Length: 87
Image (cartoon, rainbow, N blue to C red; front, side, top):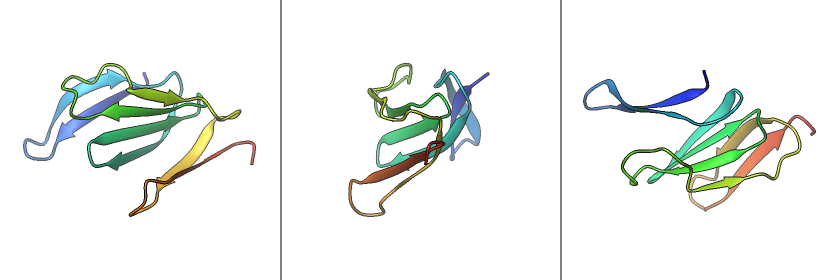
């Protein structure tokens, strides 16, 4: 399955599992209270870690025409770069 787990660094256990994508997740990024997942299903999803139970993404980007291979965040600016298989 393509579920994702959120773990507690204090407890060392999974505190929540949720279904994130229809295909393999290729990148997981964290910025402040956001979890960002990228996948071969061509989507980038933004999950609000402060929303309590994670069940639906706050928003989804559908800009890629091929599966997303990698992504990264700028260390200080609100800029994200992603690359797909059509590069």
